[in-house]
Length: 153
Image (cartoon, rainbow, N blue to C red; front, side, top):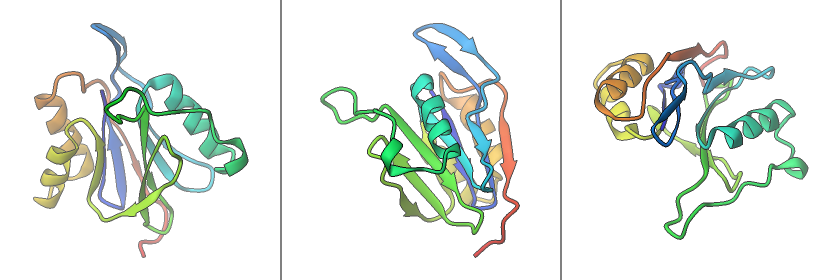
């Protein structure tokens, strides 16, 4: 499970990867700065997140979208991405690869509502994710934080 949060200037995410009851890694980089200056955080099945990070690095070409589809009949998605553009625009994208703009603060993954509430109350994205780590099972590990170098719109 994952929690990633942004206030439009900074993005933070936990680093825990699990498989059933096994901790696979506690230092995964679920939040990454791209060559174009965007910051992307990815939640979901880790192998698919790695494919998505690669797709973003290659320029988000619609001709090379990874083959990722929804899992299960309940409509859950296999992945979700939070994107902070250099101009301060924030988007969320699921496995349909159609990003949509959202207001800040924004968060994805489990505990997203907690993180948003804490940021609305003045906490930083890092502090919000740290609180989720303390309260939500399956979220944890090293917290990665990236600060935007772009100009806020």
